[in-house]
Image (cartoon, rainbow, N blue to C red; front, side, top):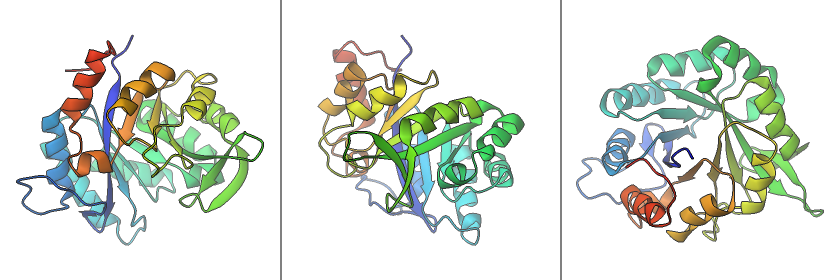
Length: 252
């Protein structure tokens, strides 16, 4: 079995982390490069930056963050937010990112995934899917932070993303997000049963046990969290120790 990955996520706006951090010794509270270096020291397998400014006007600041991070951090770096074109992929990859995450623009124009995968390789393309449960128990794709329901079936869309060339799926449960009650196991299993590419679990993690649960009870390949790590409620090292104690393979 491949080692499971633990991925801290940093929401970045105008060059600063916006969910707040509580690291001791960080020179500038909220500096994403400093935070990424701290996670690298803790043993994170990858780091994800989400540019929530997500405008072309603000992209220069984010690109500088990516360049500085790539020089100081030696784990894969994924960048998402405001990705609309293949040219956006190219600019972010050239700045030093290893992968680019695309969400709303791919829902609007699925060919974006195919074009990006054809040009840069599937390993560079992460399809981010935000899903919400409907009254009948199915899952639909939502965009714009969950405010707009596209009506598209989330499971079918995940399958399409793989067929179009995405190398990975970042799957966020909008029902679980922010609840701290655990990852959405049902959603994760529904998706991992129909795709063969790695799926990253996102949304709902609130305590240490949730990490072992998501790997024991679903087919997820990685788990992503933000606030738990930012506020030092848990470190990546603690999570990996707990997974090892549960006989779940991790990179040490």
